[in-house]
Length: 363
Ligand SMILES: O=[N+]([O-])c1ccc(O[C@@H]2O[C@H](CO)[C@@H](O[C@@H]3O[C@H](CO)[C@@H](O[C@@H]4O[C@H](CO)[C@@H](O)[C@H](O)[C@H]4O)[C@H](O)[C@H]3O)[C@H](O)[C@H]2O)cc1
Ligand SMILES: [Mg+2]
Image (cartoon, rainbow, N blue to C red):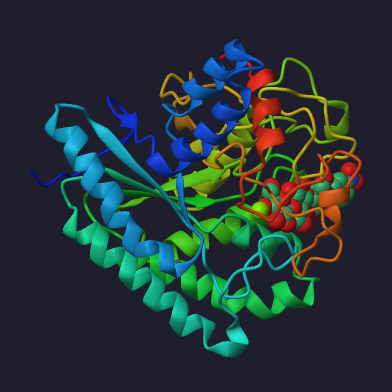
């Protein structure tokens, strides 16, 4: 039946555990089976945990139908399953870094290609109006508009980012959809100097898109390593009073509400199980010693936080450590980084095994 979502979309639902991530995990399990069977079993259990599907290239969009068909099959068995998707293909993507440079360039018709990408997603999502669908909108992009307008590529992309995101918010505004716009993390927009301009930027985006019903709020800590709640501040976070994601949400939510954007939040806890492992807070690439964090849940203990979720699939690289690679970013050879590492999005088996070993809570 047609789904109309009101309120927290995650309540009473499990998050789709997609077969693509599961198949990559099987590789790790096979490599551990004989030498470390207990660890292999823990690794295998991750395949059942729902992570988000990243539509990071337009050629992946048609595969969305396969996943949605699979969810229909699970729903036919009486299960209530969320479709968890990341929309991530803006032209001149990842403008302040190199690791996740995208396929579309503004200089090469990227804005029109992005609208076609969004239209393709909208056509499929519209057809599957019986599936409760959650969309994270464009990790890192708006955050870069707040802190990196000094980077020529970001300054040059500002108009395209804002227009592209507003197009997405309007075009994907369906009754069965809930959208969360990415807003970096506590160590990015959570800094006092950044959070005030951030509140204006996000509320303007929301209002200029016509305050779409489906725009439920904000996603934080996507692909990052911050605690949801830290028992004490990680030394790398000093002197930021917002030293974990809960402090960031507590500070940000009322500012957005006051500016006309009554945002709810989801927080990525996929790789936040271990704290105090970064030399510098700005070290974002393949952080050595990381562990899987709090399992996806709606028991957040926070009225503004709909769910803790695993958005970045742990085990997929943040970026290559190969200095000769086109998309090499020096942050991926930071003192905090696990080296060697493959290209962004590629399977990073050693890192996955560390995430399993260091999982907190334990697997
Ligand atoms: O105490 N002080 O006096 C003081 C003064 C100034 C300060 O400045 C702040 O310092 C922060 C670093 O601490 C900066 O935050 C970093 O900004 C980077 C982008 O520029 C982000 O990188 C992205 O990370 C994504 C994954 O999260 C990747 O997917 C993506 O590819 C990658 O590009 C880092 O996470 C994020 O931690 C702030 O901008 C900056 O304003 C801070 C304190
Ligand atoms: Mg990235």
